[in-house]
Image (tube, rainbow, N blue to C red; front, side, top):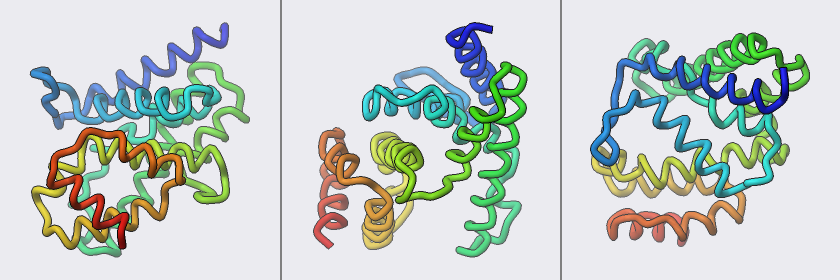
Length: 196
C-alpha cells in the first residue's frame, strides 16, 4: 500500500473509531462526537506548531485519545490516586487500539512502536517527539478546554494546574500560548501562573 494511502486510511479509521463516542460537543453550531473533534484539533495544532513532523508523530497526535470514553473516569476512585490510575490505564488502552488500527493499515512494527511510545508519553522532557506531542496537548487544552474547565474550579486551583502544565511545556510552546485568543479572565490566570 502506498505510504500516503495507508496514512489516509489510518486517519480515517481513527476518526471512525472516535465517531462512536456517545458524548458530543457543539462547535460553531455543529455537534461532533467529543473525541473525534479533539483528535481533529490535535492534528490541526500539530500542523501549526510543528508542520515538519514525521508521519508517526502525526498518527500519534490523531489517536492520542482514541476510545477514551470506553474507560469512564467514574470507574476509578475520585481522588488524585484514582485519577492517575485512570490516566495510566487510558494510555495503554489508546496504544492497544492504535496498534490494531495501524497493523490493519499495514504499518511496519517499528512505526507502530514509535506511535505507541508517544501515546504512552514515554521519556517526557527527554525525547523531542514526546515533547512536541505534550506541547500540542497543552496548547489544545488552553485553546479549547481551559475556559470550560476554569468555570468549574476556583482560580487558585486553575493557576496551580496551569503552573504544572507549563512545567511540561517547551519554551516554544509557552511562547505559543501567548498567541492564543483567550478571555480576559483566562488571560489573567495564565499571567498569574507564568509569573509564579
